[in-house]
Image 1 (cartoon, rainbow, N blue to C red):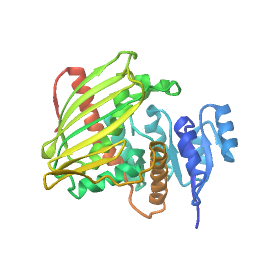
Image 2: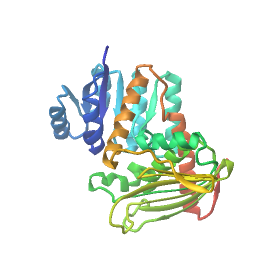
Image 3: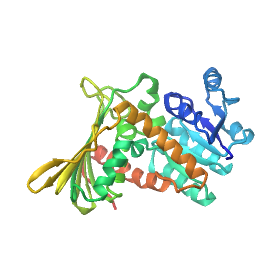
Image 4: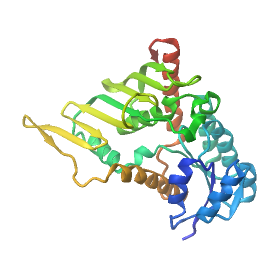
Amino acid sequence: MKKIRLGVVGLGWVSQIFHLPILTKCDDVEVVAVCDKDKSRVRMIADRFGIKEIYTDYEMMLKQAEIDVVDICTSTDTHLPITIAALESGKDVFVEKPIARKYTEALQMAEKAKELKRKLMVGMNNRFRPDTMILKSFIEKGEVGKIFFVKAGWLKKLSADNKWLTQKDKSGGGVFLDLGIVMLDLILWMLGFPPVQRVSAKMYMHKTKSVEDSCIIFAEMKYGISLVLETSWSYQCAQDFFYCDFFGSEGSAMINPLRIHKQLHGNLVNLTPVNMEPPLNVFRKSYENELKHFIGAARGLHTVISTGDEAVQRMKVVEAIYKSAAKGKEIIIK
C-alpha cells in the first residue's frame, strides 16, 4: 500500500507530544518533512523522529517537498495563509483548532477547500475520545430521552509554553477560543448540530491584558436545549477539571468519567459500560483516532469528520459570544 506523504508545519507541544509520535508510527504514513521558524528546534525534532527534510519556510516546503497532505500546528494567526497556500499547492489539510481567529478567516479557508476540491479537516480531538463516542451513541439512540439541558466546563492552567495564546493578534481571543470552542464543538456534535439561537456571555481578565482568562456563557439552542458553559485559565482550583453533562427527560449522561443513568420502572439504572480506559489513555487515544481518521479521509476511504464548513458555523457562534461579552447583552444569532 502506497504511503501518504505528509509534511508538518509548527513544532510546538502538540506536534511533539501527539502528532509526530502518532504519525511516525502509522504504517500508511511517511512524515517526509517538518517546518518551524526556529532552526535549532526543527533540526532537533527531525533528528528525534528520523525525518529527512527540514524547513524554516512553509512556502519552500510546499514547493520542494514531495508531500500529499499538510498538518498545521502553528499559532492561530498563521492558519489562514498556510492553509490557503497548502490547498493551492494541491494538498489536503489538517489544521489544529481553532480553525482561525474569526469567522471571515474560517470562511475563506472553507471556501478555498471547496473551490479546489481538497479535503480540510479541523482538529477537534474530543470527538474521537472513546468515552465521547460511546456517549454520543447512547444519546442518538434516545437512551436518556430528549436532552433539554447541558452543563459543561474546562478549567485548565495556562501553559508557559503557549504564551502566544494571551496575545490577541496571534490567538484572536483568550480562554474561550482555546478551551471553550472545544467544549462547544463537542456538545453540538453530540446533539447532532442543533442551531444555536441566542447567547449571553460574561468574560473576565484577572491575569491577562488583551484577552479573557475566564468565560461563562448561557446559550439556547433549537429544540428547547439550554447550555451553561464555563472555561478558565485562572480559576483557583487544585487541579485541571474537564466535564460535560447532558440531562434528558429519561436520564443523564456525563463524561470524565463516563456515567450513564436511565429511569426505568421508577428506578435510576446505571448503564455505564465497564472497563473504560484511564483518562490519560483516553486523551492520547483521541489524537490517535483523529489523525488516523484524517489519513483515511486523505486516502478516500471515508468523508472528513470535523469539516471546514462545520468550523465556519462554530465561528459564527463564537463571534456572537464575544459580541455578547463586549456589549453586555444577549445576542440573537440569525
